[in-house]
Length: 553
Image (cartoon, rainbow, N blue to C red; front, top):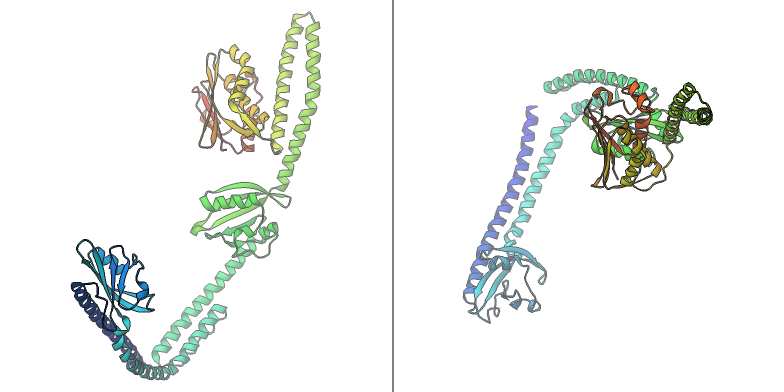
């Protein structure tokens, strides 16, 4: 091994010689450039000191003298008359001379078709000034370098040949054990590790092979365990009922199980952008927004006639997981329940209307006060039932998720009409109702009326005598905000998360007294959902309630 190290040292020396020669060339070249810079500065100073109209005449070969006036126009040149009359406004040496900091510049001359070294000085001519510029070819600077390069190349070539021969000789013995180590490591990677024979003449190499054998056995065991774990994970992922997709930071699919492949009808997706899964714009837009802002969430989508609840969640190391759960059966059940709900409500409405009419006839024809009183109570309950059925029908229509026929609706005008319709109830309780602001939204007018009516009617019904209700519409930043504020009985904090549930009542006896159906706020929530409007509520027991509906444009 020591002999081999000596040989490698010889190779390093050869490489060092190459570096020394290269450095010598560079140093000599720089030295000649420095001499050239001194020479061109000296020549320019001489020409500038002796400036006259004939300065460009009789200039020695290899030196170029150019005179440029104060407008940067060439007025004389010792080698190229074609440049006379042209402008040199962008020449660095002229700009340096003009600023009072002359500097040697190396540049290719487009007129002479070769590299030159330039230097210029500003010369006052009395009423104005000119620039005297001198240039010499770079070839004269490189002359020494050109002569010495062939000799250096020959010396370097000889050193390289000797070094190459030495390296071939030295590596012959090293290659054998290294090849054994290579094949041993390849067998580890393939999962069928075999021990490497430690039969080298060098003890150090044999020791290394023994260490590799030990590491190889451990790696073989770890790879087998990892492979078993991966197979278990794949088995689990491919046998769960949900579709699972893992997306990396660069938006490519890192993992996808068989269920997800079946959902999207794709066989190979790993390593591709998530957009290859489907052309469903709603799905792609939702996933894109999730990848952008990183907020966990969920949404419902339809793919090939089936409905899926899609859950989005962040994982460690920048991975994102998308889980698709088939909710088609649940969705179909909801549709069936909604249809039954609507049909039953519609069927109940007809006999109730008839009963209400018969009751009114009885009330008009009877002369008994007790019968009239009972008829009045029956009328109140029937009216309540009809209102309840009407709200059930409205809620059923909203849940059908039909595309609304949008038009521009003035919310202030709608609120004013609702105020007028509620005047009997508000006057009875001595409640002041005000409407102010301005704002127009695009939605179905009937939906706007239902939303405004339910919010304002609740504010009146659940208010104290002598209270107030303020309906306000504001527009800014592309949003329209409809706010209903009252100073009524308010809602306890524990009930705030449930008041938008259908038939949920904070105070059942109070709700019955006021004539509420328990569906008003549920209708409001569905209208907001239909138009992607945000719903905010602020309330406290005895402190009134403020509800905001924010239309995002």
